[in-house]
Image 1 (cartoon, protein in one colour):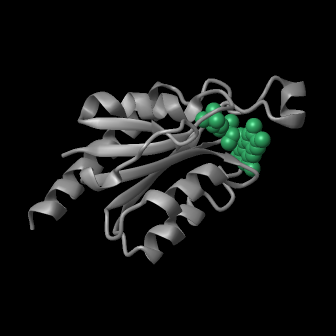
Image 2 (cartoon, helix red, strand yellow):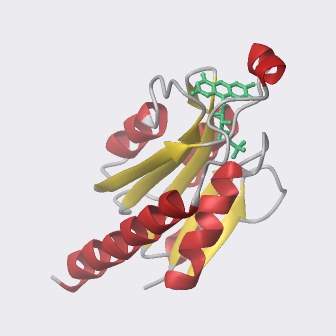
Length: 155
Ligand SMILES: Cc1cc2nc3c(=O)[nH]c(=O)nc-3n(C[C@H](O)[C@H](O)[C@H](O)COP(=O)(O)O)c2cc1C
């Protein structure tokens, strides 16, 4: 099974840490949505979208990427990290997935070190996250995604 995760991770690279923990579990391509490239998501069995939460939602570039490149009917899942208030989480990308009749396999989220705005004055919040337990949970989530995606494509 071949999976791509299209991601945006800038604040402290928290989301990327989670994705890099998942990567050894199986054939996984990580696609930074901000780099110019020709993208063919048709070749993948399953597509993930991942982002830090900024202003209570997914970064807009990830949402725009999903709108432009997500193929109709492709199984999807979502991954995100947040400092303390996840807001609408993956809702914007999930709405696009539903419009494109893509089965939603699940979502994983955990806290990520946050020094945005006033939090910087107090040394940040969610210090140390994602931690070893978060990364183990992420790996387990990805194994389950692989199982459900493989099961789905074989029936
Ligand atoms: C501009 C900005 C806005 C943020 N807004 C939120 C927010 O609304 N809710 C929240 O829980 N965390 C918020 N955070 C914290 C990030 O979601 C958190 O640190 C996340 O792990 C960042 O992911 P990244 O390191 O992969 O970019 C914000 C961070 C930044 C820089």
